[in-house]
Image (cartoon, rainbow, N blue to C red; front, side, top):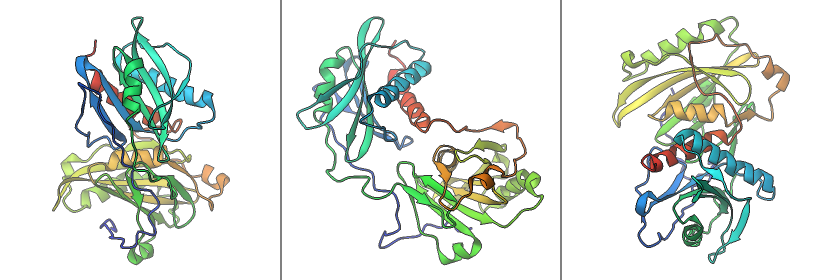
Length: 352
């Protein structure tokens, strides 16, 4: 089905930059925590004494010159942390700006817990990447300069090439998630009607443009189930319920997935369908991260391409409702904020 990885010798069609490399010198008594392989936006994390911690996460770019936008980002992070941890951190300062000895400029807010300074949340830009740092400590004012003052990047701009990809038919435009890149389509894939393909996080996703489907919209849930069951190595008993995703471009998307096994070990196969104008798209995914990557690519990263006609897209046929609902579109930073909150929950689960 066109999901075999393609080695691109020249790399000229890659649309996403390689992640920039970051390093920090831990303060005395602190150490680097092992990388969380399931969290691709986590840049690095530190663990300190008495359950203190620091996490650095890559987020969507923010308007650096608009202080209201920066503060909104940080207060939204704080609200997400409180909701996830059932704690009550309260903002304790207005937005502040500091430049450290390494030349890094950060904007940050401080927060109190039970009336005592316990947190600093900072946003910064390094090598063209926007980062949010969350520091939990009894002395955040002292430790924030000690940590951020040693932060170093690679010195190469990670966003020197476009981070957006347009499908070959010009209808779909994707903002690429971190650690995911587009790959060129093979001639066979083009003949079959594929218009985009992505790789990353041990997963592949391919998008095929379909001919006019007429009245077959109502049949799509069963078609997806049959497609998944027929995929090589799939455990039919593990087939998921049909999930519905409201895409950030407007039309809905439905998909199913099932566990699969191949030469590389345990995997996952996903089949999805999205109506679009008077045609539609078939989405196929292979890899353990396929359900999450589909939700990110289509739920918050998809927009109309240059050839799309908004009125036609808005008139796309409606999918049949299903019992199990997936991820809904929202402000583009919501996913990243939730990711950061989940990370901090892990650090703070024994904090109280």
